[in-house]
Image 1: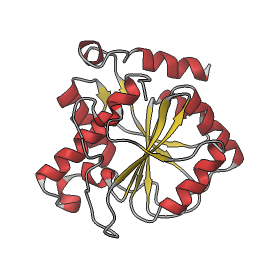
Image 2 (image 1 turned 120 degrees about the vertical axis):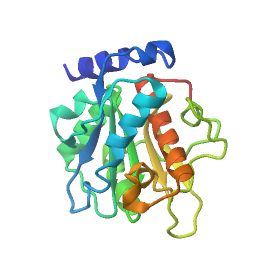
Image 3 (image 1 turned 90 degrees about the vertical axis):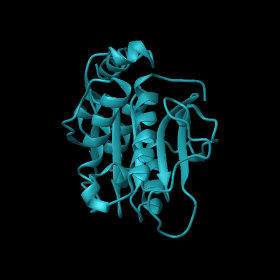
Image 4 (image 1 turned 30 degrees about the vertical axis):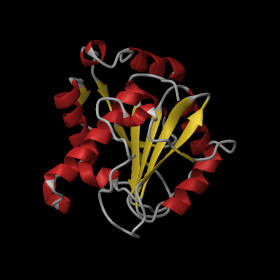
Length: 224
């Protein structure tokens, strides 16, 4: 039943041009996890991203964005899920199994390190896919060239430790199932202007890459 939910949603977005624009509505979500980390950070991010996709890509994404528990059956109602925070993340064994089933069934997870999340997320995603490693995606990867081009990978939104922004992925059977931005703070760039007062050009590029992630997920698997 869960597999059919994801398959049905993704099948509506089999094209990335006119078919994509005419697709039925869907709903993105934010992942709520245990461990004490602030999963609720950046509350305006994903609603703004959904609105940007609707305006720029012609999608019909619901701008109401729910929080969904890692272990909940409701996770399978959302083809694209965002995860962020600054600190600890803990998945129980049942939550790890549920998240794995969701991603295997066609779901997509975007993780945005809001600073301080890296050591935790790498450990917890190993519970989900022990056999997979995060790999830095080459700049020619399709996720960087959907509707907007990023020839040098993810943009630098906020400075933390003077490291370059990087985009890592988990790839399962040739499909990117999880995109993880590190030293980038992509989700911060989607927030309302008043939150961080980032320049318009910085917010624009953040939203453009975010929309690429959504387009990639909703468009189904591409060659990796």
